[in-house]
Structure formats: C-alpha cells, structure tokens
Length: 340
Image (cartoon, rainbow, N blue to C red; front, side, top):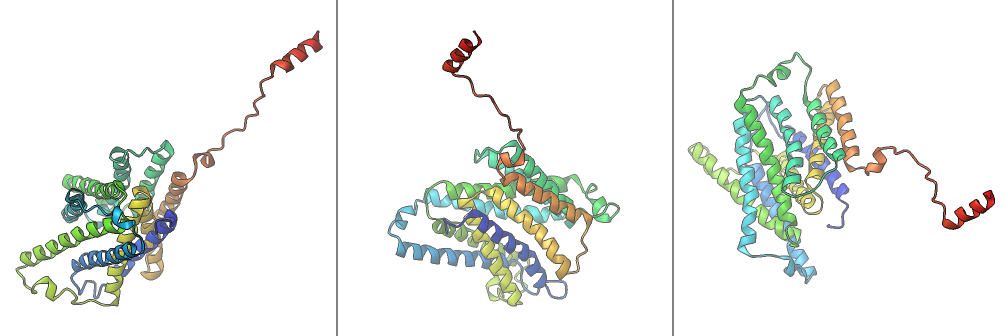
C-alpha cells in the first residue's frame, strides 16, 4: 500500500468524498432521517478499527520485521487521544456556529480551513511553501467560496454579512480546530517508523470510545426516551445507510494513508475538488441548477491545482539567453597575434 502513488489515493479520496454527501441525501426519507445519525460515525470508526486490525494481523504474519515497527509505550499511545479530543470539540463548535449563522454562510466560512491548514502546515510541521504555492492555496479558498456564493440580491448572499460577531468568531475557531486536528494527525503518523495499521488501530480505538461517550451523553440529554443507544443502534438502517457508513469509513482510511505518505495539503485539495464534483453530480441527481459562480469556482480551483503541484519552471516562461562562452587564454593570444 505504501508504494501506491499518492495521486491515485487522492483521486480515490475525491470520488469517495464527493459521493458522501450524495449518499447521505439519498438515505433521507420524507425529508429526514429514520435512523439515529449519531450512530453512523461510531459504526464508521468500528469499521476502520476492524479493517486496520485485520491488515495489521496480516502484516505481522507475513513480515517478521513488523513487530519492531510497533511502539507500545503508553507515552506514545496516549498522544492519539488528542486528535479525537480535538474533533469532539470541533463537532460541538460546529453546532454552536450554526446557531448564529445560516447553512450557506457556514459553508462559505468553512473554506477558511484551507488557509489555516497552510498556516499550521508551515508553523507546526516546519514545511516551507513557495510563493506560488501560497498563491495557489489562496486561489483554492477563493475558488471554493466563489462556487458556493449565490447571486447577489438573494437572502443567502445578504445574510453573509449580517450574522452576529459570535458566528464569525466561532466559524474561525471551527476552521482552526479542523486544520489543527489534521496537522496533529500528520505529525503523529510521521513522528516514528511505526506501521500505518498500528497507528490507525490506536487512532480509531480512541475515536470509537469518544463516539460511544457522545451516544451515552445523547441518551442522558434526552432522558433515555427511546431506550439506550445499543438497543436501537440499527433502527431505521437501509442499504443506503450502510453505504454511508462504509463510505465514511473508507474515506477515513484513505485520509490516514495520505497523512502518512503525503500531507495535509493533498487532503485539502482532494476534499475541495470533491465538493465541486458533488455540486456537478447534483445537477443530474437532484435537479440542482448550475450557476455562473459554480463554473467560475471550478476554473479557479483547477488553476490552483495546476499552480501548486506543477514544477515552477513549467509555470513561468523564462527567456532563453545565449550566453557567449568565455574565451580561453589560448584563443585570446591567437587573436592578438592575428591582429598584429
């Protein structure tokens, strides 16, 4: 798996991420969910945990050197609690943000995580980006935002600048937490030579535990009105719902691979392109009306993609200069004798 080209995994991640929103929409019935949506992330974490465990078991059986790439020291293991904790805080901040702003404004502010990821990528991972790459990241944020902005004069366009200040502050915090979780996960994946599947096993174990804690908290919040969560975990599930679970789990596994063998910027581009692909697919699946902003956003994002990943010399046409070769001492002497 490590020998797989990163761009192949990135394309696969883009396809899966773009289908995520479509499958989630198709899983609705009568405009709502018949199943408890909080169970989907939990089952996705369990799916990732099982797959990682099976791959680790197979790797241990086939390679004697794998055991030397497993760090069982508690000081190392406990670090994997932090990403799960950050994501838990991020999810609560998301809900708090939506109490102050509408969905359209929230989606537009969510593009801030593109820029915050680049900033944290430089500050915490000490990865240098060229000026062209910084411009490309800025263009990506502009392109995704442009594709989401509706025509001026509409309510969603007007509401973008009329939300309370708390909504903007929480939106910035949400973008920062999302970027921080990704950057910290990349740091964990690359800090030692542990096998990817052992790192995933630790990451998804804590992820599953935090999701269980959330389900229990929801039960207490609603006074166990529908009974404990484990008795109704599969209530309302259909084939489409299971496809959402498998899609979410597979996406998480691909993201962890990119964190190990590529970086956060590749993930940001994959998810951003997936968002645009989802909009295009919605034109045919849900009669979504395309806008000029959507096409402009797609063009800007493609330009950004080319600018970031292409070699700098292919982006700038440098003038070809025919410099004269310096004359050797022998040539100078011969020319002087000829002149005399």
